[in-house]
Image (cartoon, rainbow, N blue to C red; front, side, top):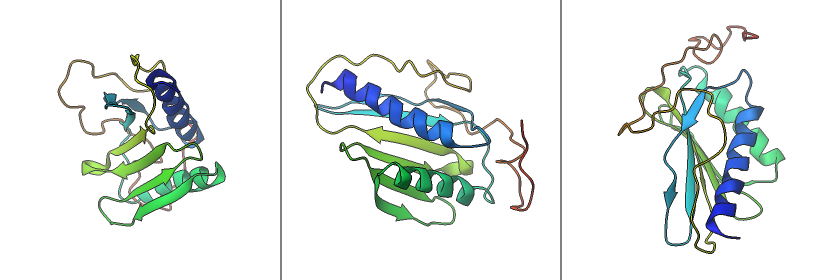
Length: 158
């Protein structure tokens, strides 16, 4: 496998977990980084996820990754900045971490592969792109479900 094929596999991993999450999260591409023999792909969630809903998101992702045969490697239950890390059967490292203002970050790190050029992801972002800006802004898209302050609020079907 070369870096381009590994990047495409990373996109499949990211796309599959984001499709599993309902109601849908809106996301944009984070930077792709290329090392000496590996690639990292990122998705930055632009939906505002309230503190009350972070556990819901982590639970959905944890269950999906386990069902997909991923091996959980680290679970950080920090109240403010929780994160989960896993490894796929084919050696890709995956993670979801919650950062400042509840912004969720998905990342896939490839195993060491043959060097090659790496094209931009062809996955279609569901939030605006921030090409040319130094930093992607904090989450700025409201969701009746994910942005709700109380866990008892019913999910919107939008």
